[in-house]
Image (cartoon, rainbow, N blue to C red; front, side):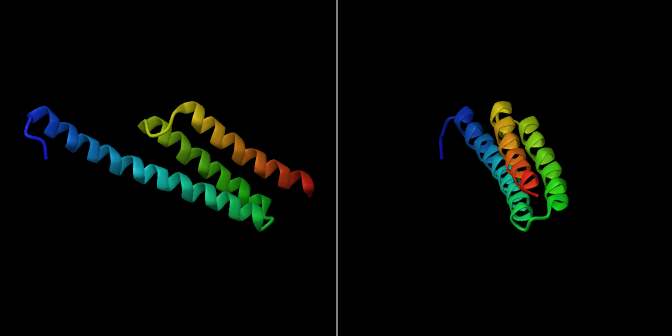
Amino acid sequence: MPNIKSAIKRVVVAERNRVRNRFWKSNMRTARTKVEEAIDAAKPADAATALHQAYSVIDKAVAKGVLHKNAANRRKSRLAKKLSTVSAKK
């Protein structure tokens, strides 16, 4: 543990941010998994609903500063592309 007051504060802030980032990253992984499971189960309606929820979670992570907006757009694009390839096969 640091002795300097500002360093002590940085430790506290870093831990708070780590917990928040971990929460949002976990939510993003869960949302992505739900989309992929719906796609694998060949349920386009469920996959579209899960995709909409994943978009929401990803956008909230950007708003919280957990994820860069370009990284978020890349993740959303990849999910949408997976869904479109399954929809096109039908």
